[in-house]
Structures are given as structure tokens and as C-alpha cells.
Length: 67
Ligand SMILES: [Zn+2]
Image (cartoon, rainbow, N blue to C red; front, top):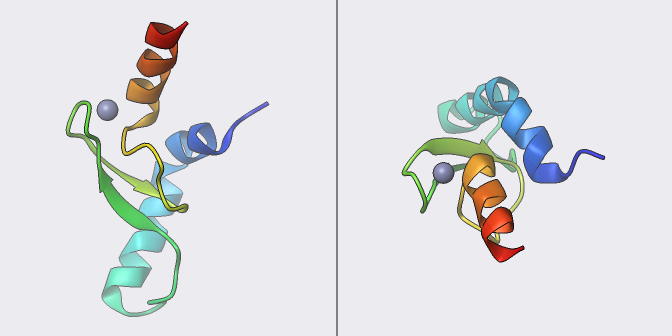
């Protein structure tokens, strides 16, 4: 099963295009945000309100650390 964060990770191009529509004012209500990963500083896009402000690779590292 693909969890939401993973879907977003593999659809960054799509989310980026949505984000560009949002910032350009074409679709200002789109629920997509620009996020800076706390782990590696990478910029990525998310549709949801992030609980963990880390990118998918960093989140995966966190899961490995926890287990
Ligand atoms: Zn990261």
C-alpha cells in the first residue's frame, strides 16, 4: 500500500504544477504547500497539512531509527 507521503514523493512534478497554479493566482485555493524538510533542507510539495515536516526519504530514515 502506498501511503500519502509516498504518493506525494512520486508525484512531485504534479504537485509542483499545482503549486505554480496556486502562486500564479490561477487556482489560489489549491491545497498544496511548499515545505522545507527539517532533516535535509530539501524543498518539496505537499497537499496535506504536514505533521512531520520532513521529506519522504528523511521520514523513512526516522522509521528505521525508531524500529
Ligand atoms: Zn529530507
